[in-house]
Length: 401
Image 1 (cartoon, helix red, strand yellow):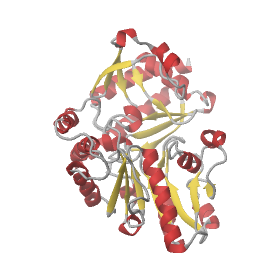
Image 2 (tube, helix red, strand yellow):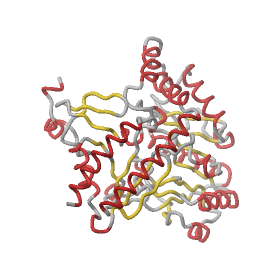
Image 3 (cartoon, one colour):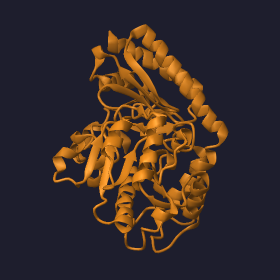
Image 4 (cartoon, helix red, strand yellow):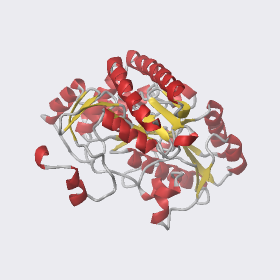
């Protein structure tokens, strides 16, 4: 079938929400991908931080195959054993008391924002409805989440937008302190802004948000869709900052490539959602929960230490390339969420660089027009990294030449 289909068929049959690469991947294993012409790529994108344990991970495949022979879908009028185990593991590993499962990060954030509004309404009244979010943030593509995200280019065409949402500068605690009031029902924040340029939060900023939320009885929501499931070297980034939110959202790497989302929360908030107030058809299905259970079982201390080691290796190699080619102005991030901002002469050309990288056999990402983003599998072999950086250097040499 793949031999008869090509990139032009996307333009012919698909709604053009995306502009896919000219090549079509057909096979993958670990951190290596092959296209229709059998060209090999090293994957430093990980499906946008999704394939946390690589492609076709044998442990995930074995778990999924076993569940396929047992139970696929039963509906939310029932529960199932895999989802109960997944909830138990997440609760016992985090601040949370309860978990709501869905299918994506956008759905998890939608649930979190709805829960925060409903919690404020029931506890404090209808006037307490403002949501504080941050410029350049990204929280999803539903109408609510795209409005809360701090990038108007994604929301402006869909007005009228949900109201009572305020966007403030990221990492600016004084701006939040000056603005927050008793009307504020929630603050939503990414510990590391992902799509908006891979910008880590200062510890004092997140700790200050916690204190302000406590003072004004506002819900603190951590969007860990991209930073969660081991991406930064701990199960969730908040554990490295020493800050506990009231709600945390997770997706992407949690399913290791299988669609799953989760909203973790404290019991006082959880009780606001009763039968009929929120729901999902496919969320928490046995297949997704089984794969997520297998992902979490592999996120042990050795693997997380390996994430930190790989971070150091990648940053060192990016710095060495920069010394030679002068292509970056900043290299930042945590764990295996790394951003390299292009120097001024190359501003706006991140996509050009990733296109050249693909030609050389490396799959990479951008985070806005100026930032090269790397989110490889957490267990990517160092030998694959070596090969990838030989190829990336060829791409950079072409890029600056």
